[in-house]
Length: 258
Ligand SMILES: [Zn+2]
Ligand SMILES: [Zn+2]
Image 1 (tube, protein in one colour):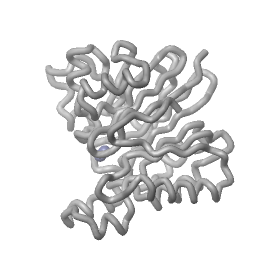
Image 2 (cartoon, protein in one colour):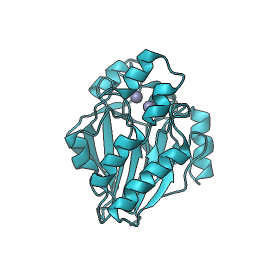
Image 3 (cartoon, protein in one colour):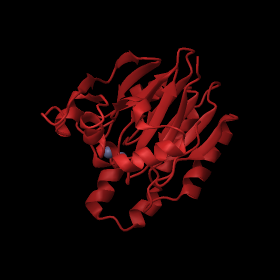
Image 4 (spheres, protein in one colour):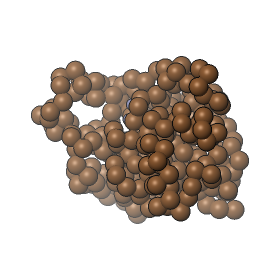
């Protein structure tokens, strides 16, 4: 039996894509990079698209679905998406070969991976986040694109072995930054994106005795910095007394296997 592992191939508004693997099953979480770039970064982590059994989509925004059609149609990789995501993304049409429904509040098993699906508060049609588990019960939770941490999300992500959590923006940088007012309002709303501080507040409740690694995700290039996200997360983790490692996922290169 192989222990569950994750690598974040890319994270942020230029493209989100992670690989989760355990017990001989490997899946993508979102497909927001181009097919070519997905292949290139998979190779950097010793993998190829041939090994990918499925794509799990969180929602239909372009930075999460960019290559989904191509990977589904030309590579025959099944796509798991909520009904709302599929409809809003135009996926059930004749272009897509194989789209399978998932829904918040449900669980499923795919090969060696158990998958728990939870609805998220975001301005997609029916956005979700995923917690994957191997047969030994080791869990990887991944949650980005959240306006806030709702009770069901907090419940689902508590005490994961590996927790990937959005640290999108610093509120002051966002407010004083270059984005137009409507976009600032959208990001700051209850169905927008998690700030460093909101995520850190969540971390204090989510980190538990099992938590071995935390990864900050979807860090904005305009309204945040890697150093800032890292510092705020580090402070929150230190308060919990955890020994969990901390990493910040990048736009342009994959993290190690975690
Ligand atoms: Zn996004
Ligand atoms: Zn989004």
